[in-house]
Image 1 (cartoon, rainbow, N blue to C red):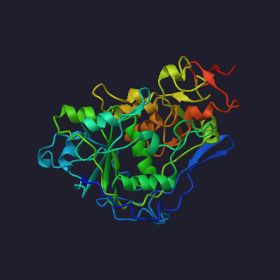
Image 2: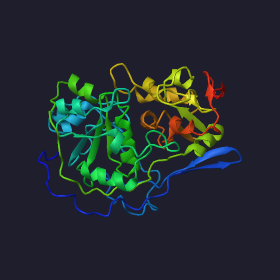
Image 3: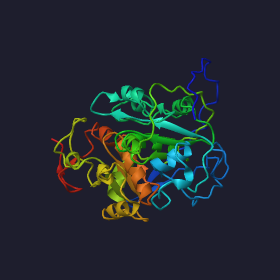
Image 4: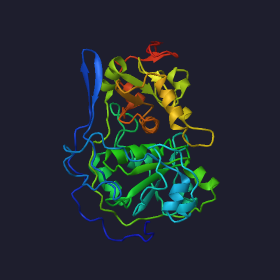
Length: 375
């Protein structure tokens, strides 16, 4: 757990992130798009196989098992010593969930990523009123995104070296297990999960059900700010597939491009954030919010797999996802991983970058290739 005593000394001068690795590319061969993925990450957890996340990964087995994506409230409470591990209720089966029998982590870092896109942004005040014990607050706009710009969109990826320093300021060391959560069904916390995985911190998970599930279980909350001792992690950037605007266009025509926004935004009936409404021609709408059950947890993996299979997601077709600005699309990438479809590419600029170029076509209506939405 974290120390709650502020460290008055400056952060030690470190080398920053490991040398940046090229982001995965979209290659188009005779009209067919395919993703060339980033190198497979070496395990970064003390209870995975040993490995240095800065090391050359050419020899890493690309078929190595993915670490768990989700952790339940009960398992997390057991890890934190708030519940007896031997008496935990059943956990959903499948590789997406951390199982009670998994080796208990040496240390768990909790990140609170509460954010309100339509109500002022970061929800730091709510964090101060009560958060999971030891959780560090994460500001999505300033720590999980770079500077907005027309070509980059509203929430571009942060600078790799700046994010590496941010990770250390959260108190993360090599070998830590990281659990992210929010109070909005994981829609903002998934951005932190994606970035941590992109930075080679593979033992990062989303708390299924988030803060509401924690409260419903009667587990304790802690008020006030947690200021951790700076950590020593050395992230290695470029581990998750990424596409840019040209890659998204190629994916829409030669692969499968998914739009994770609400259906009314996809159809072009409403657009609360960007100057043009509609969707990228060829994209299929799979609202990520519909992957969430009524209790705030993700739907069962088999149900999610059926949902994605219905729109053409399969092992042979490269897939990319976008949303408004790359936030909820990260949740869709996570959901696809839970459904057994890891390796889906994220379009970070998303709709907010696409519409800034007037030469990019816009479709409206319920069909992928709908009517033109440009004047």
